[in-house]
Image 1: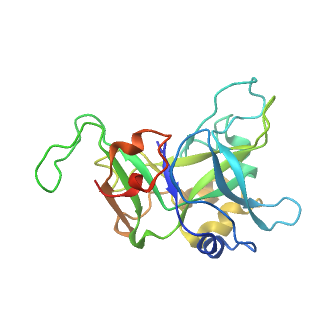
Image 2 (image 1 turned 45 degrees about the vertical axis):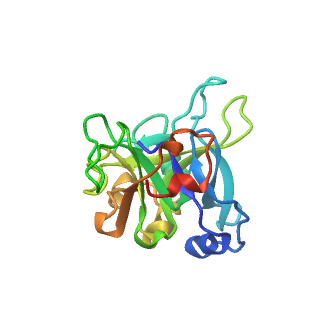
Image 3 (image 1 turned 90 degrees about the vertical axis):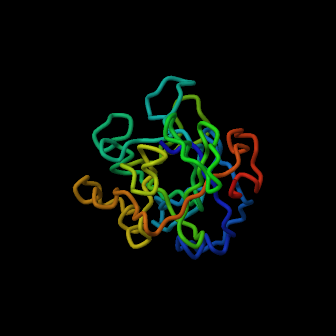
Length: 229
């Protein structure tokens, strides 16, 4: 799963990366947690232009009971057929900007650090792209459910690549920038047309390092969260 990520890129970099007309005014976020508001890029239904907006990270399907918990992740392999995500997969896809994400080592998988010392169980790791550039998770969004004030969203996950596999058995879908337009295009709704976009991102284009356990606390939104341990 993907349960925590960060977005620290400046607004002008985000605008250029996602083809936005306006430069967003976003403060750096070092430890974004579920149920918080996150930046999302989607097509405006009126003019089909890309807009950046804030949505709640935890998708609550239409028809859900008031107060029902949402989904922070959806499996890319099955979201297209699941009732909770099927309509969003066809009609409401989005890009979720990020500069990195966190995963925690599963029990029994912890590796020693470079000095040979054992790391704590559940050591957090930070994953991102080589060079630290901004990228996009594949996301789905949903209008406000009954009794809710905000639209919600979720991040699609897929099988891990060779870099993430030693730490976790899933990873978020990171989209190639060349596929952003297709992912957002509402005229493309068939799973067969979109499935090639939903594969594990090449491990050779990513980097990873262990970080401080400060990131374990979702209230800690400080630079220490992204500093190598």
